[in-house]
Length: 438
Ligand SMILES: Nc1ncnc2c1ncn2[C@@H]1O[C@H](COP(=O)(O)OP(=O)(O)O)[C@@H](O)[C@H]1O
Ligand SMILES: O=P(O)(O)O[C@H]1O[C@H](CO)[C@@H](O[C@H]2O[C@H](CO)[C@@H](O)[C@H](O)[C@H]2O)[C@H](O)[C@H]1O
Image 1 (cartoon, rainbow, N blue to C red):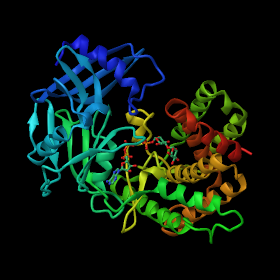
Image 2 (cartoon, rainbow, N blue to C red):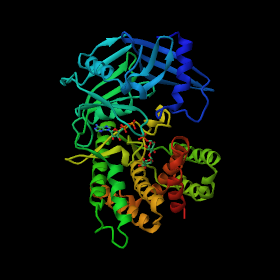
Image 3 (cartoon, helix red, strand yellow):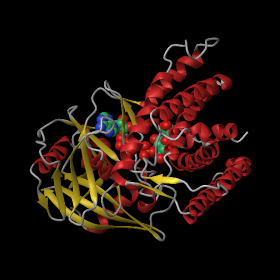
Image 4 (cartoon, helix red, strand yellow):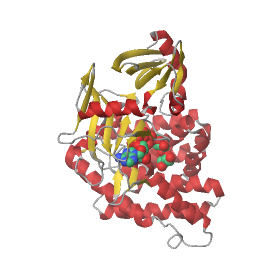
């Protein structure tokens, strides 16, 4: 490893260019190494403290150094120091194989603990590949058998993704936990799960269906190729089943009025912050605020429980046996405590309803067929709600004000998310908001 000031100087330039780096909207004022653990010579696990004004976030990185690196490691190159190249070892199959072996034998190295699910024998020595895409973390697939998610921004304690997947183990709607990596104070660092080799993510399936429907001008959605409504209905039913399992595992309670008001205050605060950040949101602010007022005025208390927290079509996979829900971490921009907040289950339903809107608006932007996009979204939103209610979830049709407020809140979150992470997508939630607010 180079001297710390050289290393942290390089990292300060490299971090903001990573898709998973959460602080792209702020200048980095300092990077320091909190822990450095040698995994083998020239391969270290680092926990970094990244200072951005008053905010300090912790990130993790497995970093390799080598005199030269082969072409396949170039995408992970961090920079040059005298005599070697530093690289992000998530790109390195040998480094990944080492982490897998450490989980298999439950090693303890420095402050790192490697664990596996009791009774599971991990198949080691598998080839690995980093998955490309729009992720908040970094995931590596091991030969169609396992997927290992390396949490990038760390939070204290057990990560909700590990916590929920362990609590729901045996469910047909969540992937099996194979192993994990944590610090010796119990902060989760990585999660190894069963790889759903027959799965396709819901976003890809939905966009394919929306495209078929938008292109097939004149047809009705039920007969256009690739109708998705039956899948949306099944997804609704799977969502209700997972909500039931979450309620059983973690309990259900009645939300005190003070907590409802705090939640609405948080929604209002986010709206005002995002209106400042993205002025194009301002024309919809009045309609959004009025939905929040209706929520604050609701006479009966809400029943709350653990939920998914960042539920959308990219978080579900259709496999040969049905729908599986992934990534119970909550919204990446929320604080660790907020991510475990209890919520009404229709908050997840609203997230998925937004996602049908998203798929439709995304396709509409490509070809301008607004009324057809609307019809596709409406058909799939209705089917999802039908599946959800028929499988025992609270009927969205009977909670229109709640759904409206949750949908607006999610859409405001999305406007900020897109402005900060994918500015070329910003028009998607903005267009959909002007439709929802009309
Ligand atoms: N168990 C799994 N089997 C197959 N693919 C998976 C699995 N878990 C995640 N994926 C794929 O990886 C992507 C990112 O996973 P996710 O848990 O959402 O990570 P992130 O927190 O980085 O967003 C998913 O959209 C999906 O395509
Ligand atoms: O990284 P995560 O999956 O935890 O979630 C974040 O990124 C998502 C995009 O990758 C973002 O989702 C938004 O875009 C999706 C299409 O790419 C769409 O299906 C969702 O409905 C929409 O919210 C998510 O909001 C963000 O938290």
